[in-house]
Each structure stands twice: as C-alpha cells, then as structure tokens.
Amino acid sequence: MTGTSTTKTVLSGIQPTGGAHLGNYLGALRWWVDFQDRYNAYYCVVDLHALTVPGEPEELRRSTLDMAALLLACGLDPDRCTLFVQSHVRQHAELAWLLQCTASMGELGRMTQFKDKAAKVGYESARAGLFTYPVLMAADILLYDTDVVPVGDDQRQHLELTRDLAQRWNARYGQTFTVPGAAIPPAGGGARIMDLQEPERKMSKSATSDAGVVYLSDDPGALQRKIKRAVTDLDPPGPGAVRWDREAKPGVSNLLELLAALRGGDPAELAKDYESYGPLKADVAAAAIEALGPVQERYRTLQADPSAVLDVLRHGAAQASAKAEETLERARRAVGLLAR
Ligand code: TRP
Image (tube, rainbow, N blue to C red; front, side, top):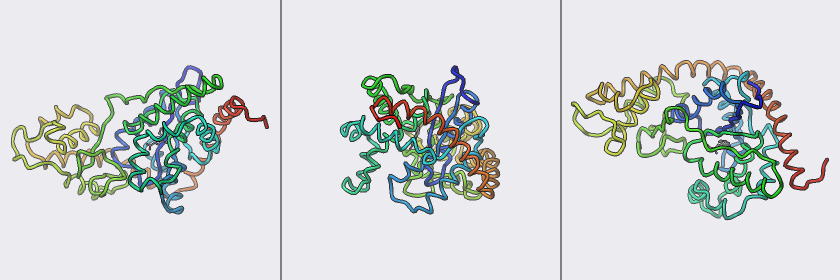
C-alpha cells in the first residue's frame, strides 16, 4: 500500500544478529504482518545498530540477509510494505548525526539499555555507538514521518527520547518532523513470551543459554525438545496443578500464554483443559510446529534464492530513500546547512 494522506505510517526495526525467536514472532513480527494492510508500513533490518557490539563482518552480512528472508517468510509482502536494510538508506546515518547534535549527554546517559549494556562490557570499552544508539533509532523513525511505532517495553524509553528530540528540534528550528505517537499495543495486548528455562526473564537472543529460546529456524525436533524441557514446577498432577498464575507458576503460565498466543483463547481458560504438564507441553509443541511450519518452509525456499531476497531489499531501499531524502533535506535546511 502506498501512503495516502489519510493512511498513517508505521515503522519498526529488528536487529539482524542472533536470529529471531518465538517471542519476536508472537510479540512483534506477526503484528508487523497485520499492520501492512492498515498502515503505510516501513520495516528495516537494522544492521547499523548491530555494529554497536562486537561481531564478525561475515556473520553480520549473513545474518542481515537471513533476517530479511525470515521477515518475508513470516508474511511481509514487498507489495504491501517497504522492507529494507538500514545501511542501504544512507540518510539514516546522516540524520543520526544531526540528531546527535540535538540530544544531550545527560539524556543519553539515562537510557537504561545503554547503562545495562555498557555495564556488561565495562563503561570504558563500551562502543560510543552504543551510547548514541537511541539517536540512530530516532533517525530511523523520524525520516519517514512515522505516526506509530510498534515496540516492546524495552524500547519505550528510546521512543520517548525520539519524541523529545523531534519536539525539541521542531521548537528550535521550526516544524520539521512528525512526532511519533506512543507504541501501539498489538490487539489483545501482545504476547510477552518468557524464556522456557528462566520464565522470569523475557525470551531473548541474549539469554545465557539457547535451551530456553525457541528460534524460528529450529527444526520440529529441536522445537519439541525445548518445549518438553521447559521449566515448570514440582506440583503433583491433579486439578489446579495447571493454572495461570504468573507469580506462583511462571513456567506453567508461560506455556499457557504461548498456547493462547498460538491458538487463540485465554490462558486462564485454557488451563482448565489440563491436569498435568506433559499434555500441555505436547499441545504447545504441536501448536508451535503448526504455526511455524509454513514460515520455515518459505524461509528455506528464500534462503535457497538469496538474489531474490536482495532484489526485494534493493527495491525497498530505493522506495525508502525517496521518502527519507525528502525529510533529510527538510532537516538539513532547517538546521542551517548550505544548500548543495
Ligand atoms: N532498538 C530496537 C530493538 O532493539 C530496534 C530498532 C532500531 C527499532 N530502530 C528502530 C525499533 C526503529 C523500532 C523503530 O528492538
């Protein structure tokens, strides 16, 4: 869908490294697919953001293409959205610079994700890009006159910063950017899928072990194994053993939420069908295999044809650049850069 003035614009980004998992799919990617028909949709694989932490060049190249293939396999359709790789649209890096000169050290230093990540590697050796990461994200968003940004809780602070930067800029240099609205909570509240081994933690590719993370590329065997070994608790089977109670039974509740997200329905209601954990796990595994099977099949087909994926990305980048250039030109002029 190409944007008419009444269609709102949605934009989101995903990092290429580490692969996408079931939490990404249920919490975000399947909504991206949904949004294609309701919004003028831009989606990007944020390879520049991946450079904020150490990695191998060859691995980045491979994972960027893989992530794009996976997004297409999930149902993103180049006829209904603009899918591109962030670094292919150079305006992102340029606007990020202009916005870095709008943001302050203080506000970037307050970003909790920076504090967490910098603490992990040590403040002194943390890459400067890790510090300015949220400004690049703001550039991603502001270049497209984005109205809404679907992001999880962990990115809300970055979105708030984006709004602050846009408002500050507009107040200082005149109306230039659309101020994005808050994140859209997906219909039904959005699934928050937890790690199968540490159900108090969100499922994440930065988990200490892969055992609790179901990757979209996991084959049915691996998928079944991971779900079967999911942490539950030691309550004996019987009525009430399977119930939705995030506090007392985090592992079981997570399995119920997975089932609800995959099959539809309400986790507390679904619990009533079970008296022990085995059958619940079997059903979750079956539902996951059913949902991911077609995605994986398309993924394999696309992986076998990388040039087709590249074509989609090149087309997406050309489309995105046209819009991004307009916005960047507005920003360049507003801030006082000499016309070229
Ligand atoms: N920072 C986001 C994340 O780690 C990814 C991202 C980059 C993004 N640019 C974006 C998300 C723009 C939404 C909009 O999840």
